[in-house]
Amino acid sequence: MITLQKVAETIGWTTVGIVLLYGGIRLFDLLDPIDYREEIRKGNPAAGIIVAAVIAAITAIVVTVIISP
Image (cartoon, rainbow, N blue to C red):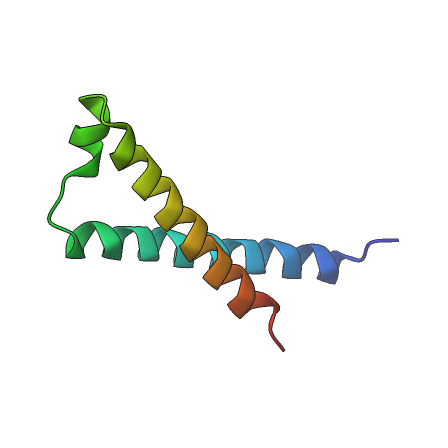
């Protein structure tokens, strides 16, 4: 049986992960002078690849931080 405590912990760590991921993406947006949203709207596939790579990298870091003992 799943206890209420386990469900609360899962929701809590999920919230922490989402906040860290969002913060990392916002920080990248602030530090990089290129407007990737505009470039993607123009049809630039390289901008989409860069944004996807940044999201994957930040996600890997957040997951590692959350899972590490």
